[in-house]
Image (tube, rainbow over all chains, first blue to last red; front, side, top):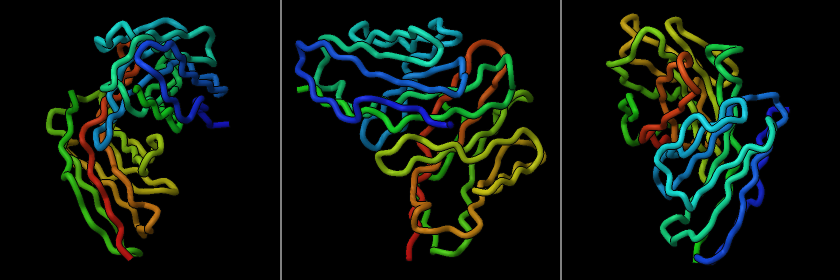
Length: 116
Length: 112
C-alpha cells in the first residue's frame, strides 16, 4: 500500500468556521508534511512532522494548526481563515532519514479548500 | 529557497523522447537530485532520483553530469498522459527532518 489518503477532497468553509483536514498513511512512514498550493504555483511547504513531533513550521499563520495524533495520521485544523487561504492542501509522507538516506515522498491527491 | 533552474515550458511530440533539463550549480556533495511531476489537479508523483550515477526505472532515465551541476530527465517515449509540470529538486536527506522544496518546474506539453 503506497497510498496517502486525504479527506475531504473538497471543502467550502466560511471565515468564522472551524474545520479539519485529515491525512492518513499506512506505509510506516515517520515523516509527514503539509503543503499549500495556489493555482499555477508550485507546492509550498507548511509543516513537517518527524516521529509525531513538529520539526518544521514555515512561519505559517496560527489560524492553521497541525496535529499528529499517531504515526499514521496527520490533521490540519483550520479556524478563522481568509479567502486568500483558498488553495489545494497537500499531504505527503516519507521514510525518516534514520532508515534510508534517499527516500522519496508520497503525496495525497489533496483537499481543495474554498474560503467564502 | 529552491536551488534549481528549469525552463518554464517545453513541448514534445507523442512517441518521441522528452528531455527535461535542470541546472543545480550550487549542489553540494550530500544532495540528491529528485524529479517529481504533477498532473493537473493531482498530487505530485515521484519519478526518479540520483546522487552521482545515471539512473533508470520504468518511468524515466536520469542523466547527471560529472560535475553534478546539471541533470536531464528523459521520458523515452512520451505519451499524452505525460503532460504535466515536472519539478527538479535537490535535497539533502541528512541532518534534521526531510525538507522537499519545490521550484517553479517545467510545464511539459505532449502533442499528438
